[in-house]
Length: 447
Image 1 (cartoon, one colour):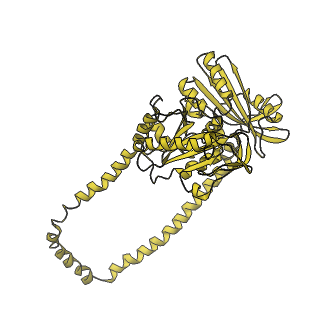
Image 2: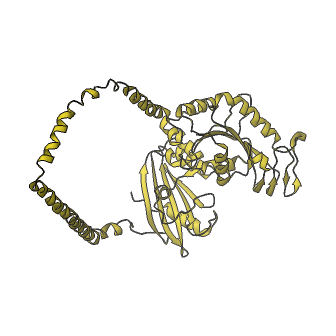
Image 3: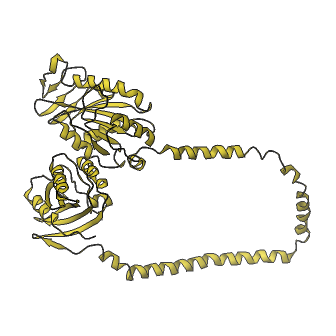
């Protein structure tokens, strides 16, 4: 999913909404689509927290700020809300705190309906905060097109999947038109970028459908039946067939007897060839096969007393493609010169730790400082982990909001590092993880 930040989000839970959408990652691997953060979908209303255009649906995301954190929220759409058993106050004598946002979503949905492809449903997500451990909705409400949830990656993904139910994804052209309607000021995305987010490229599908029609049209010329005139040549065939019967003698059967003998040799030859191939494979495996096994592990480097083993390393200038959330928008606005990424495995206090490092170089120090400020903003996005993208980790670490994070800027270069445990939950203030992140941020990246 691509995040395009357009304006200010009106609710205090906006940071959590943006972080939840950003955590879904780029591309259609998880859910795909484009999230317009802080969009103003129709001129007559103020900006909303987000409008998400998915290949199979459109979601209107609106934040509702509760007075305090709560463990259990009872949230019927048409009834009063209760937080941990206590009734929640509603503004202007409304039935519940979400009533004004539900009315706004209904207005937006009616205005958008003629502009949205007919097959795409329009759903609403009411994101509540600052924190809710459990949200209870009546079954009748859950069966509809509105979800009430606390915005986490898991909850947002579940809502997106359940509310985007079109039988076929909309086309790249339809997505272009819809995004232009919702956010005319946003830079347009290319067809390849939209296709990567799960929108279909229907022209190729139409072309494939046209090919069978042309072949069906070619079939009718065959009925003129020149074939009935060809049977006369069959008469000579009938004349030739009796000839073998007349000359059926013992010498004729002799070649038939020799053929089985040659056929019997074929399996033996095949078995012999197979044995030669197996022997060759074994020799290659025992002689030349040992070198690749010892090649992948790169040399261990010691940084601040911690030994780091690099699992993946790469460099390119497609910086925005490797970022999510606000950092992606920042790099689209101010491209970097190069981005070097690496993933390291280390051991701290006897426990394995994963460290993901990104080194981003800009044209000037002002751009570098501005990018670091965006990166340090909570919920502002992140740089994708390289080993996670390429499947190089022995086991999958979780570089989510619980990982330890450090950053630094020197001139035109910004360094970002995340550290997380492999075998246990991580916390952002864990001293051991912070130590690993600081050391990893200065480690040498081998390309």
